[in-house]
Length: 423
Image (cartoon, rainbow, N blue to C red; front, side):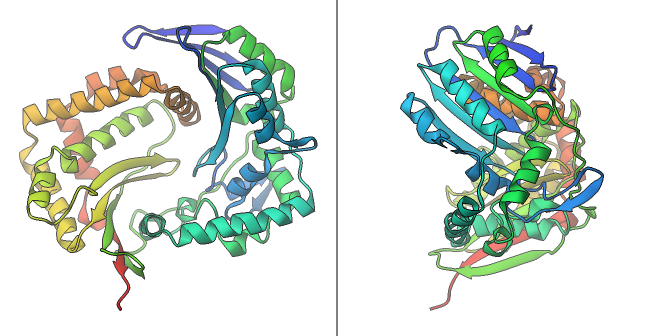
């Protein structure tokens, strides 16, 4: 395996691409007892339309999440139970663009890694077990649909995007998952759970060569073809300016979001992520003049916050929380963005924000999970996440203001509200 040393971070990443196309990343931590393994496929909730054997395939919303649930089934029983018997703590998640399976353990690491690689690469479904899972996941869907935070966020995405499949709930709907069969699950596994569409990342006190050797022995020899995906041709304008829903909440909640220009895969993606995070903190972070003003006026409380998100074909910056006057807060956010673009940012505040963001990225290296997920997202997005120090060094105040000018405009904004039901 090829070691890559990042001197300014004090980290070494061992990299290898197996003949079957599987990417392997190992970050040795010889002074730690814990070992963490993350096995991920570039397949998530928005990959519902794709090309297989020259034909476009439409799959039900929620199928990637459904497949994640079913992957723990094996002919012998359940992989979660097997890993737990060995003292491991396993789990999995599905996001819009990825599905990941992971565990951490101190003992029996090689045996646990073999179990992980085996059950993820060898599916086992029956029509009976798939039908049974529909009730379980259906109940989960009903629960999240009753969650105000979930409704607020999903309705925000649907207000921003007309076509792009990121507007679809990762879990799907009770109706959509009713169309999932064992056959469709096998088809999706065959398409996306191929070594060439996956990455194995291990962090901890392990031997990189031994990790690669185990993966070479366990996984299929063939990698599988690249699978074209269709997320929908998304126009620049927002789908709707605002959306409002009454629910059982004690106080109104809102999200004010901007539909930003998406970024293609490649090294510029990391720069875009850093720019978006800095713009978000300069505009509405806890130390920003806007936050201090809104808080002192009682327009927002400690629940207020924001973030910048970037996915394939999608980028958006949003802010929200509880407020009795969400439209006033939204107008103040836009007014502050326009002011920053005209007048610039206080130099000291800019430097403090850059240092705080850099420090947050640096602290992320203390988390094995964060390291593994970052390396995985970087591989899928075509960039090296460990190059963030160079990116921070290259960004100027003008770069961040240009980002705000290009993306934080009233024409590209949408408001999502959850309000209390009337008595």
